[in-house]
Length: 312
Image 1: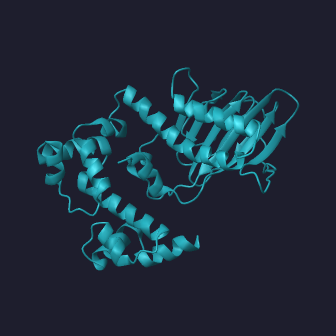
Image 2: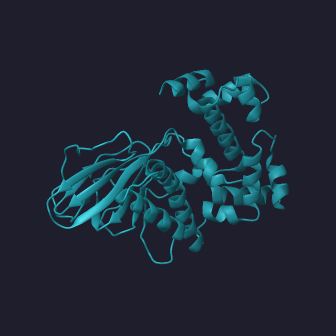
Image 3: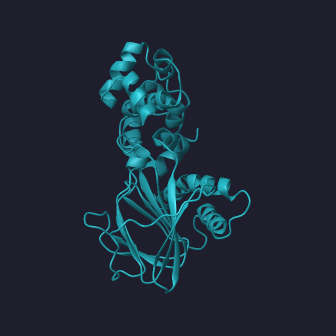
């Protein structure tokens, strides 16, 4: 099972939106917090990311061509040619064309040029998957030679399509922006694995936890028990439960319940399946038991959740 793809799919509530910004020194933009997860990609030139009060980092971060910033909670910030440049607080004029999927904005004076792609992914932050919840508030992926080649290639392709649009670009650009989220998270997981940091990067490779995760995601409706999952891992019940919780951040049965209800919420948003069918596909023996568990987690009955999601 591709657990990373499934985790993101369960949280997505819409397509990403993005704006290409051309800044000529001197320039500085104050970006308000955005719903979902924010991202900033330097396509060409250089700039600084300057944190606002209460931001996850305290010092300005210099950025160069190919650098990627991912803000897990869409935190606001200032992007500028230099930390001393006064920031604009007004809304940027964004030009949009019916045939082009990304808005454009031009700011600043007549100095050196920096080209950026900024935007956000619409993710349900109220109930993040544990993999996303354990991300740092800010992920900075510098464009280092030999590192994260797939991410670098995607950024270069995106930059080329934006710099010189051709036939097919209107379809290629949104697909690349959409794929960038997976590339960013894969790169972060690779970095975590290289430092031997406990967590999801280690869980995907762990000979005991990885099979259990795959089993839960392949068949959430199965009546899994800690004993059954431990048996797949070849460990005792207690040893498996400790190892799972240490890497995932919660006990096996808590994760199973979370994933069942997350899967149910996605089915309610995206399908016309009757509530009884949703209950059966997510491991609940009756519609009543499912509705009770769902309301406890989401604060409303499944039917109300479906109606609200469809109206949004």
